[in-house]
Length: 343
Image (cartoon, rainbow, N blue to C red; front, side):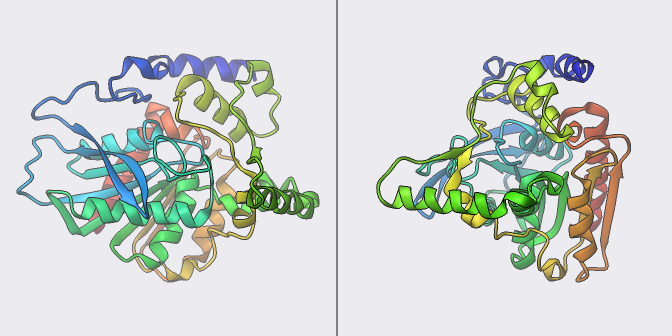
């Protein structure tokens, strides 16, 4: 396992210090300044149900606000922020003449919302609707050509949003993670024996909050050592800790969430009602991702569209689709073919 950590750390060395980027972007090849004729980044804020949301909009090279451009809304992973993988894919798609938006979820990242790190599916889905609301009013945005890209947990929430929000003409996911399934059953069904125990803990945590007591959190921000990372039980978690705590760390990114959120998470199922998706659907995942079972389940249920494709990125794991250049290139190539054809 030490070899994997070393390889990842070496590969992410260029991106590892967010302080070196004026927009605090952590990914390789990130914009460092807005240059005329190039992709530009525009930090914005807007209100969503009384909560201030922070977002980055990326505009294409030679952007002309009087023209019309296709749009892609990008939803970030669980625990992630817009400056990480969501920003990378937003920038890459903007390079190919799309206006894109990546926002921090409400209660998370740089967005407002108290208590911090509430992680309820309804909020995350509403975040995606809210991005569509905002970008639809942006100069140059073609509201008849809005696409959606959800990554990891953002993928699970994106397929739920697209089931009912038909402003999204197409929907794509990358390394989709069903937050409800995993919070309920454990990753790869590893916690089936403790479901009722964890529900009791979540119930007690909500009762404590309602009585004015302190907020209880699951997880934390303590940085793990390489040996601790190597001892984690699943590849997704091992490589995820490397990504979020070492190679692409950002101070607004946190893996913790309120324990009371489990009341909502554990009754949520991203893969339910997949038949409501009648838009073109592309679901991408690494062929070696231990999370692949979630993408396969959701894809199988998508019976409402004949235009659908499951695309496996050869040899990639879940986290490697976030940053390894050859895998990102393959994903972007597939996305642009999909969006160009269907938007």
